[in-house]
Length: 256
Image (cartoon, rainbow, N blue to C red; front, top):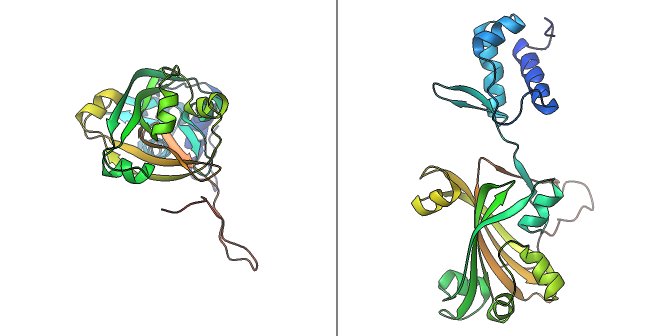
């Protein structure tokens, strides 16, 4: 129950709605009671209710549809920014079910970007796999993974449709992945990508490029993936090196 006091009323209401979402009173996709209903239920003004709802919209817990109302958003798929793990590994660890909606695999000549990333000559034939990835049957990402030729010749013999590449490399091929250079930036879903991700053309996406190395610092693969920004969130702990004797943390073993 909302009580007048030092805690602003809109914060109290936001806390109540947040608790209801966390406890399952409201589930992803459910419509929130209207502003008028919330006003009557909690005996609050329209401005207080509106401010509480906007607070939760800003947190990503709610979203609004013009002319339709306010709805509970789906849970973000979190990933650890400083952990080298694969799509399937991370999804399973967080209680989700990973999958693949569509896959293509082919050999193609390396362009300038791939040649640099894989440390091969331009136009070298490389093995590339593109997969539309799902979480709990919802499309959330399109990933394109290109392997150096020696690894590609091994990968093309395996069942690649709906499995973890990390698992294939480490457990079936005996290739121990050790470190990776990863870059994350904002991107835009053009027509083809937007269709694959089931979003509107021009929607913002997270563009994540990764170059993976084995324990001997040899390049194994380069991946370029587009993630739905409304479903993914990256997080990590960061530290300030201000204490005496504190050494800068080494994030990757190789710079390029």
